[in-house]
Every structure is written in C-alpha cells, then in structure tokens.
Length: 263
Length: 235
Image (cartoon, rainbow over all chains, first blue to last red; front, side, top):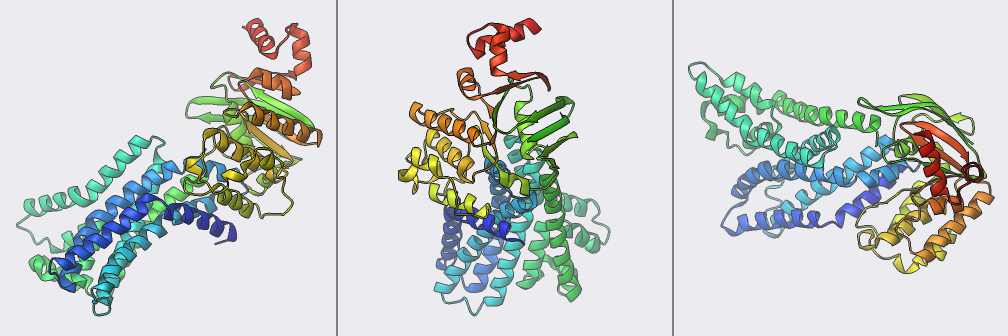
C-alpha cells in the first residue's frame, strides 16, 4: 500500500468516524449487549443471543450503509480523481473508510459490556471467534454493497437491490433449503444440505458459530454431520476459504469496475 | 499546450463525442460552449481522465495521457459544484489536498486571502454556504500553481465582490502563461475573460474562433447575440 492510499484513508476515516451512524451503531451494540447481561444472562447465553443479532443486523447494516456510502461519496470521489490520485488508491481508501469503522465499532460495542461485566477474560476465545465472524460478515456485505453501487448509477435501484440481496441471504435462502429438505425428505440429505449451506455466507457464519459455541446438538442428526465436518481442521479451513471467496469475488469485480468506469 | 485528436466517446448507443480535434494554447483563455447535452462535460471529463475515451488521443505538452495519474498534478480543477467530505473542516480539506499533492510550501494563497476565508477554516464542510463551498474549490484550483486550469462555471453562486476577485485572478494567471479552459452559461463573463471560443454541438466542434472575430463577423455588440446569430445562420 503506498503513501497516497494511506493519506486518503486517514482523511476518509476522520470524516466517517465523526458521522452520526457510527455513533448510533456503537451505541446499538453496547446497549444490546449490556441489556442481555442485565436480563440475567451469563456470558455463554449472552454470546449465543448476540450471535443471532450479529447474523441479522451486521449484514443488513453493512450492505445498506455501504451502498449509500458509495453513492454519497461519488462527488468527492470525482474530485479526488482530478488530483494526482490513482483509481486503485481511491478504491482502497473508500473501502477501508467503510470497513474499518464498521468493524471497529462492532468490536468495541460488543467487547465493552463484556469488560465491565467482568467476563471478558473468561470468554475471551469465544468472544474473539464471534467478533472475527462479525468482521468477516462486515467485509463480505460491504464488498457486495460496493458491487451493487457500481453496478447501477441509480441510487433507488441500488438500495432496492441491496435489500433484496440481504433478504435473499437472510430469509429466502433458508426457505429454499427447507423446501428442498421437505421435498426430498425420504433421502439422506445431510451432505447436500451441508454443501448448499456453505454457499450462503450467512448460513456459513451461523454454522461456524453454533459449532464453536457447541450448540450443534440443537440441530439433531444434521448437526452431528455438521459438527464432524466443520469441527475438523479441514472444515475450519473450508469455512475460511469460502468466506474469502465471498469477499474476493464481489470486491474484485467492484475494483475492476471502479478502475474502468466513467465518472 | 493540450492537443486533442479524433476524440470519440459513446455511452451505450449514444454518441456523445464524435471526433473532436482541438489544440488549446497557453497564454489564452479558451471557453468551451455549447447547448446542454452537447458533450461539454464529457469533453472536459475526458481531459481530466474521469471519462475514458473510446478512441482518439489527448496529449499535454506532447505527452499522451493514458491511465497515468501524475499528469493531474499540473492541473487545477474547479468543478461546477464541489462536495468534499461533510465532516471535515475547511482547514482539513485544504490540508488533505496539500497532503495528497505532496505539499510544497510554495502555494498560491492569494485567493484564500482575497475571499477572507480565514473565518471559515474551522467550519465543517456541510455547514458551509454554497458560495463559500465555491470559494474553497476556487482556492484549491489555484493553490498549487498549476499550468493548466479547468474552470467549470467558476462564478456560479459567488457574490459580486468575490466573483470579480476570481475574474481578476483568472486574467492574471492567463498573463502569467497558464492554459485556461472555461465553461460558463454567462456570456458576458465569457466575453470578458475568454480569448477563444470553442462551440461544441452534437459531439463535434461546430466552430472555433476568437471572441474578437466572432463579434466582428456577425456585427453584433455582445457575445450572446453573436452566437445566437451565428447559430441561426447555421440552422
């Protein structure tokens, strides 16, 4: 990364860190996590509840904010590209300016209540796993957001597309899996379901967390199959690879488009 | 000198630029005019590298521009309406651009003082009035003493005092040997500032002439009338 990119990132961060949504996002996670502790949760139960919130909220916020962010930065992007700035540098700066604050906010917002409730050290590894997944989802859905915003110039269309994509991954996809399971209920489906689930980054994140929190028994026989595969070293590596692919493809496409497009 | 040869650009099926040949000389103010949608913006954006032409070439002082960002360090650009990050102060915006340009101390802060922008320095960009935004963007265009200046509707939204400050500055920079390209809808402004007029119509240069000879050949007193007459004659 060269110095121009770092300079751009510096100012981008300064701008974004002062914007209201970062503060709201931080407060949201602090309040929710602390509330879960107050309603009598122990560290383990709080983590499990947080998992569901992370899986629901982070993709939604990342994809919606990300799409809007890129549309709103358009004029500024144009101005910077009239300076001696390369397009790749600007792209990196814009993406970092979104992903770094979002990730830092989630990490801080969840960690702080763990610290002041005194269970930060005792639940450290599970917490880190949750935060890593949260950051992974943030990057994936921000990359998708950038791809959407670069696909169409029309802001309304872009935001619509972002919601539809989120709905697809969060709701529709699982519905389709259930439909498949129902239709082929006479067949042994553990392995196909495993493969299908892996293709959805949200499902993958959910499985990874459930297994980490040893809650896979909730999933019955399928859970056992999942536990055997994803609990293994190969399984963990597969999760990582699929996640990286989910970052690489949309982000690579968006970057290429950004470099080639007309402003 | 900027020379442009056979510049073409299509957006989908729309032929925006259909072969533009033009030499832009230093020591002159060249005004790019034309009706809305004629391709003026696309033309200027191609010179800035924001739009990538389909064919043709643009070279600045004999050096072709292609994908390289460095040549833009010699260009100052004042857009029609500038929007910098909302939460940065004017001071930070100036610092940022200096930083990215590899700030030399040798900057031209004449306009900054002429516009009295000192009181605006701590204000966040989003709280600035339209006129003050325009002033910041004018200061930035001239700050690094660029050889080439692109000014897109420079006096739009400026009060008369600031506007005449800016016009004086443009005239002085021209005398200093800069290459200046200007667009505006205010014909009196063009008449006052420009030496040359390039009229773009349907993606080609319809005519290219000096302001003096345009007035003379049409016998009209103002540039606005002269262009209207010329276009009527053509139609």
